[in-house]
Amino acid sequence: MLTVLRNRTYRHLFTAQVVALTGTGLATVALSLLAYDIAGDSAGEVLGTALAIKMVAYVLIAPAIGAFADRLPRRTLMVGADLTRAAVALCLPFVGQVWQVYVLIFLLQPASAAFTPAFQAVIPDVLPKERDYTQALSLSRLAYDLESLFSPALAGLLLTVMTYNWLFTGTMLGFVGSAALVVSVALPKPAPSAADRAGGVYAKATAGSRLFFHFHVPQLRSLLALNLAVAAASAMVTVNSVVYARGLFGLSAGSVSLALGVYGAGSMAVALTLPRVLDRVSDRSVMLSGALLLVVVFAGLGIVTAGQGGSWRWPALLVAWAVFGAACSMVLTPTGRLVRRSAPPEERTAAFAAQFSLSHSCWLLTYPLAGWLGGAAGLGWAVAALGAIALVSAVGAVRLWPVHAVASAAATDDGGAVVEHEHRDLAPDHPHLVNTSVPGAGRRHTHRLVADALHAGH
Image (tube, rainbow, N blue to C red; front, side, top):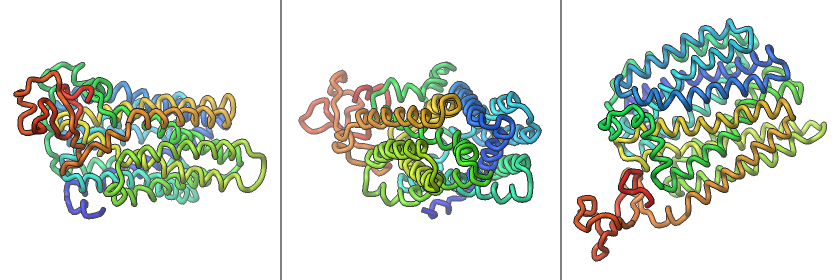
C-alpha cells in the first residue's frame, strides 16, 4: 500500500491531508467540550445544529464554488481554502455563546467545500493506474481513521496539561501545514468538461449531480442510498458520543476522546485490509455488506441504550462504535473507485464535487436528527430513527444495484466495468459503435460503461 508514496506529488498531498485532518480532529474534540460547557446536557442539540449548518454550507455552496473553480489553478484554490480555514480556527478559542459557534462554523465550511472536491479530483490524475488509485483511496480512508484515532488520543493527552481552547491552535497549525505542502508540488490541470465548453454557470454547478440523477448507472444510484446509511451511523457517533459519555454514563472528558478513537480504530482496521480484499471481491459485495452491517449495529445500540445499570454498557457502546467504524469504512473506501469508473475523465471533477455535495446532504438530515431528537425525546428515539433510516437505505441500495450489473461485467485495465449493451437509437454505422460492436449483433457492443448522454438507461 505504501508504494504509492514514492510518487512525490501524491506523497506531499497525502501528508497535507494527514496534517489538516489531525488539526480537524483536535477541533472536533474541543468543539464537543465547548458545546457541553455552554449548553450542558443540551450539547447534542448544539452540535447537531452546528453540524447541520456545516452541511448546509457544503450542499449549497460546494456546487457554486465548483462552477467557478476552473477559473483558478487547483493549487491556488486549495491553498486559499486552507489559509481561510486557519484564519477561522484562530477565532474559535474566543467563543463564549452558542450563536458564535454557529457563525464560525458557517464561515469555515465554504473553504472546506472548495478544498475537498478539488483534492479528491486531483488524485486520479496524479495516480492514473487503478491499483495505485485503490491504494491511495485506502490510504485516504486510513488518514481519516487515524484522525479519528490519533487526534482524540492526542487531544486527551493535551487536555491533561491545558484547557480545550488551546486545541483550536492545533487546528490552525494543521491548516497552515497543509497549505505549505500543497504549495510544494505542481498539480496537473483538469481536462475541460462538456459543462465548461457549454459555458453556463448553472450547467457547471449541476453537471456532477446530473451524472447521479439523470443517467441510470446502477452503482451511482445505489451510492446515494449508501451515503444516507453511512450518514445515519456517523451522525450518531459524532453528535452523541459526548452525550453518552458525559450525560448517560457520567464519565470524564477523556472518555469522549476514547469513544471517537475506538470508532476510528474500527474503520482503520478495515481500510488496511481492503486493497487486498478488493482484488478478489467486487466493490458491490463489500459496500452493500457494510451497509447491512450498520443496521445490525443499530439494533445492538438500541439494547445498550435501553439497558439499566450494569458495567457492561460502556464497553458494549465502545464495541458498537468500533463496528460502526468498520462498516462505514467498507462503504466509504471504494467510493472513489465507483465515481472514477462511472464518470468520463472530463466529468470527473464535477462527479467528485457532486458526490461531496450529495453525501453531505445526507448528513444535513441525520446530524440535526441525532441532536434534536436525542435532546427532546431521548437517545433511544434517536437510535430508533437513525436505525430505521439505515435499514431503508441499505435495502434500497441493494435493490438499486442489482447483482447482474456486476455479474455481466468484466474489468478494463483502469478498473472500469466492460458491459455488453445495445443502442437502439443509433444507426449501425454510428461512430460510437465502431470497433466495439459484437459481431453479427447489430447495435450491440461492449466497452466501459460510463454516465454520459449516450448511455442513459443502460
